[in-house]
Amino acid sequence: MTDPHTALDAIGMLPDTEIDIAEAALQLARVDAPDADCERARRQLSLLARDTVAAAGRIAQDELPARAAVLERVIAERHGFRGDTESYDDPANANLIRVVERRRGLPVALGVIWLHCARTAGWDAHGIDFPGHFLLALEGSGKQCVLDVFAGGRRMEAPALRKLLKSIEGAKAELRPGLLQPMSTRGVLLRLQQNIKARRLGVGDLRGALTCAENMLRVAPDHAPLWRESGLLHQRLDEIGDALRCFERFVELVPSGEAAARARLSIDELRARLH
Image (tube, rainbow, N blue to C red; front, side):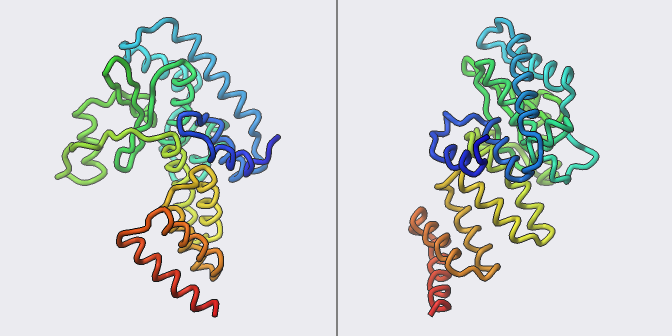
């Protein structure tokens, strides 16, 4: 089997539309849990996709509720995947291999499975970068059907979206333009890994958080904020040369603005320390 780091480097060279989201998430999961049974998870994901295609029949392009019902029936009902409400912060909830084993996960990890099945069926689907809670959208004939995969594929009309937003941002929050912004495939993968990185930072595991950030950069080598964050982590670990490399790459990607100015100050300070 290909080394997962090599696989991630190859994924990082692909156009976003050519990334197999489930396979990429499996490779990230292998790095995080090298002893986990990746092949078993891959077979289970293939079974889910085949069952979706078999159940889909010939649903018309604009029959989005029917497509949503197929996904719910296959993924949530037949195979039993649902959100982990009992141990939400368990790191296993963001590792796709563990999610497949446990049939429990975070919204974005479950979203990878739903996107995998929908796209295998030939349906247009994307993640939604909703504040504090990943959502999924099916598209067709100029229409959109928004689903909460953490809740088994519940349809999210405007009242439900408003209620969700208020639960996250407070009672005064209201729906506004841009809340249903589509996510790229890379964006979904980065949001998945962000959960792992945040948990490692939360327990003071700087090395683990840095490793996670570096693997995220393999998938998204031009993601400027990650270069800056990696530089800060290297700096906190007193790894001056690596910190310099990361800040310099950030400035290449973002040559102007306040963040670039702060990065240049860090570069100057680090170079002074080298001498």
